Image (cartoon, rainbow, N blue to C red; front, side, top):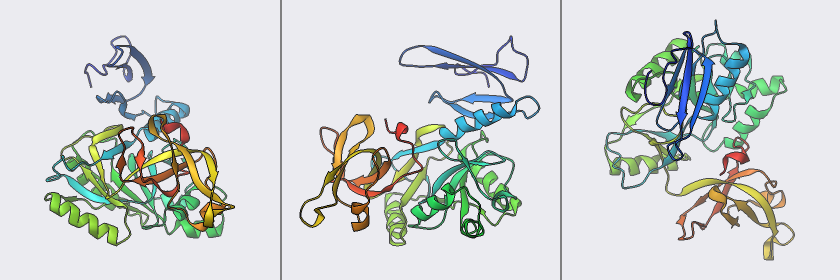
Amino acid sequence: TQSTWGRKSSDVPSPSYQLILINMSTGRKRVRTAEIEEEVVNTSQRVLRRRLDPAVATTKQQETSFRVLAQSVLLAHVWSPSVNPRGWWMSEKLDGVRAFWTGSELLTRQGNRIHAPDFFIAKFPRCQLDGELFLGRGEFQKCVSIVRTQLRTDDLDARWKQLTYVCFDIPSERSPFERRLTALKKTVQESGSQYLKSLDQTVCQGADHLQTELLRVEALGGEGLMLREPRSRYMNGRSHTLLKVKRFLDAEAVVIGHEGGKGRNEGRMGALRVRGIKGMKFKIGTGFTDTERLHPPAVGSVVSYKYQELTVAGVPRFPAFIRVRPDVAAKTIV
């Protein structure tokens, strides 16, 4: 655990560790000491994993640590044809709600508790898991509705029984992906939970194999594919060890206003005015249903859109609305 990124403090008794984070662009140091069992840091300057010792850490420390982990799960970059996919692990990109299992509860990407019924998580393992709550292809909005509802009813419990927690990683494991994948399959199998499964992974044979699988998944109503670099470690935040593959590019933006429609859309929304990554402002005028134009996404909400490419000025070309993203916080669009 000793490295230039994090080292065990000599003046703090075990199991306390002192974490030193160095901002490579400014050279500034930030020191954090916490009563933890293990603290490991990767070169993205974020905590890779934090496994609290229940005998030492308070409940508040545990909750804070798990929220940090949930807010910094591994995220993907977009695959480029310049990257040879041969040998990478390939899986379907799920259309679900990202969820982090702490060993005792599910958390959203914002670190908020997901109020899953007891029967759903009763047989989940004690280790940390990274995955998605999944209802089915094209069922994202229904899935979000189930996950966001807190008031327990017999009807809601029946809807939760339609969900599955599909896991694709074990963040607490320090081993390469192949060993984590083996451990994940074993963990899921031994749990005996009908609501828990591991995501199927296939070794990609090359670009042709990738495109064939992409077309197959899209024909079934799937979103696209994910590529995981062989022998890669679990990293926090966005990493080039995980790549998403789609025929269209997509991104998120914050709604900052509405524009009235013309012609057949007169009297209802014609376009959304949005703010994307790096503060870029633009309009999204296509992709909406008649109902969505009558009841457009609220100002301040986050939406997903697809586009073909970026212009020289960095503006998305031909952006089209996909859906509202209640599972993504506006403050993360920077």
